[in-house]
Length: 406
Image 1: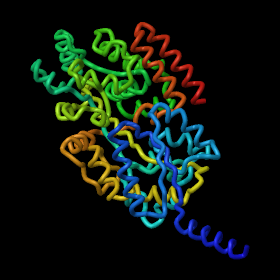
Image 2: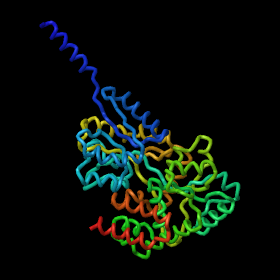
Image 3: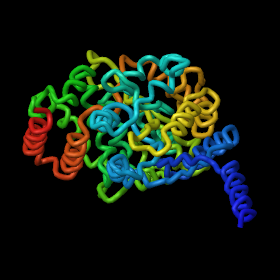
């Protein structure tokens, strides 16, 4: 009997010696290219930290957005989650659902890893809650073969943009593709039109709930948008398509342009990638500064994470130059770590576009209250479908603004 207990104890001790500490990560990197790139990151972590076992649960983008609230409130919360900087992060930090990351940077300051300008998008109430990993630019991506076929050059002004759209339409090519099934691509159109018409400060005050949506300057934004809708320049039945579905029209040459982030190249077939280029969103008013969209993606630790220490170890690993350099090269992204150079000529062109701007915003659903963002983007889709309802839509947006920003 005594001998049996000793044997059992030996087995338990042996098992304990080889047991690994689990880190559970819920990820929204569901497209094949970023999913594979993240797998390589996790493989490298486990190679360097063999005491940990990393379990990655990957969810489709839209499912992830819905499920995140449930996870953060659950006793079974994951240890690390992917997410977005700005208001999207602050919404959860304010509710006490996230763990501060300040001690991750105890040996070096946040600014030793990342540009100082990223700090405001990563903190809430003086504490860091978000680890910046990659960032990217938005612009008008276009099919270079289609442009060459019809003798078109990238437009600089709004009138040139309208001319390009008209030539494409006359030749049976959809000028602008967009997939609004999941709403958010409309946020890019609203942001750029507002920043080109009214400038950055106005746009940020509007998204902060300080300006009524019934303001004539907001209506002016929609009037420019309406020119494109009324002329039939957007993809028909766009509300039936996801952003990836809509990108296929661009890849096949059935549409010519797509206002989208750099991640569009993640889903482009290999034979199409080099046929895609981009240009800055057209200038509408030369007296207004030139502003761009540059969302930051990264990671957070839920307050109810079961293994917060392991999560912080992983977060610190993600902040390193080595990891961010590897990931950015695989996807052509810009790394958040300031010591990582652009991975290729395409990314360098994107960085130059941003550096030549007068300022940057995140994105509509990262700059405004999440509830306002969802309601607003629903109304943007409604406007694109029923532009004659503009005045009613603006009143509904304003009613919601007053309700949310009391």
